[in-house]
Length: 124
Length: 124
DNA sequence: ACATCATACAACCATATGGTATACTAAACC
DNA sequence: GGTTTAGTATACCATATGGTTGTATGATGT
Image (cartoon, rainbow over all chains, first blue to last red; front, side, top):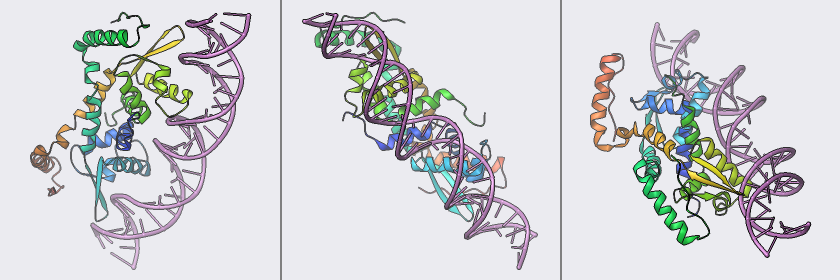
């Protein structure tokens, strides 16, 4: 498992990487919306906005149901949970209180694995 | 604040959207690595790999320091925390036990704010 | 029946992305 | 001093992305 080959995460993170799509998600967190409602606050044409919705659908973040001439979209946040779980793996890397311990363990490991590498001092 | 205009999040989520870059982050979570170490497990040429490292640097997820001819990279996970906090906003949308309450609150809100909108029944 | 509304679809465009190959620079090693 | 070694820089390529305009379709309201 050298390269974390997870096309699902690719799609989800890519979907989140655009402000318009995050704005859509935000709107949908307030409940179901049709495409016009989703598009109107975005400073772009309607087709552009619906393309963003399609990207979100591709990532399984949005589900659409057609009612008459309206396409109602609803947030499916489960993939966000997956994304958050992936991110969560690295929590210890941003928790400051672990920094010193991390540094120590790291130096002990590098010393026994790669004796050539001298222990380094940490800044911050 | 219609469109969540946060270029930082753009960069972070985009950085996470590629398996090679997630693999690099994973490696760096085990401590400092030089570019060759980062590149070797990725099935691509060295220049391609260093481009990915640059993307991570652009998102402030990786910091590089030069020691002799080696470029040592270290994970800066703080931006991951930001990303996780953004995602966290929508936790209630994927927590099943809140679904019924969410639906109720949503219907109450839409009834008082937009009287034209008829309360919709929720599936699932 | 007709106009309007909500949306789709296609063509097109500029730029970004992800990759390659090749040539270059500078430190480390013998 | 010459050869690895580690990494950069440039040019190039195919495809993806994010946007536009214009046209079509089908449901709704009068």
